[in-house]
Length: 206
Image (cartoon, rainbow, N blue to C red; front, side):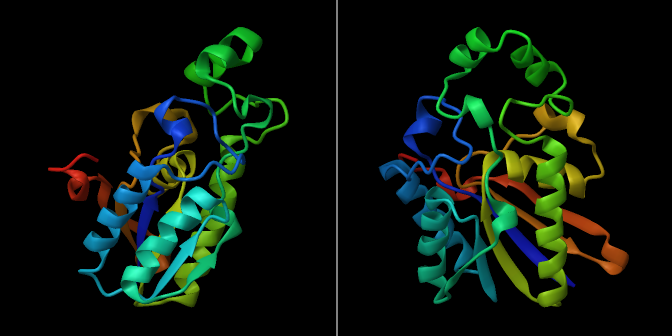
C-alpha cells in the first residue's frame, strides 16, 4: 500500500505575526529554514521514493530542503496549494473581524459554511487535495511519498482521512514543520499512523 508523509511548511513571518497567508507567496524565515532542516533529518531515516510540494515558495523551499537531504527532486502538485483566503489575504485576524463583521464570526463558528469574498470553501480544498493524494496513491503503490503543504490543507486532509467533516476544522491542529503519516489501504481506506508530530523540533530553539 502507498504510504504518505504529509509535512506542513516551516515558519514564515506571517505565521509569527498571524496574518492570513493563502496564495500570497510569503517565504520561510530563518526559524522556518531550521525547522525544515530538522524535518529533513527526521525523514532521512525513512525510505522515500518521491517528494511533492505545493507551488508556493514557503512549501517548495521546505520540500527542497527535505529533498536535498534525500537525494530526490521536488515535484509540484497543484492540489496541495494553500487555501485561497480571497480578500482576507494579508489581513490580521483582528482586521478581518473588523472589516467583515458578518463573515468572520461564521468562520470561527461554522468554518465549513463560511465563504470568504474572492476565496474558496473548505469543501473546495478537500476535493482538490484528496484528488491529488488518490492520484499519487495509484502512481506510487507500495512506496512512500512526501507531501509538503499548508496548515489549512493539512487540517482538511487529516479530517478527511479520519472520516470527519469540515465542521470539525478547529478540532485538529497542524504546527509548522509538523509531520503526519498515513497509508492508503485496500479499497481506498486510509489509515492514520502519525498526526501533527513535532518531536524533531524539540530540544532546540525551534
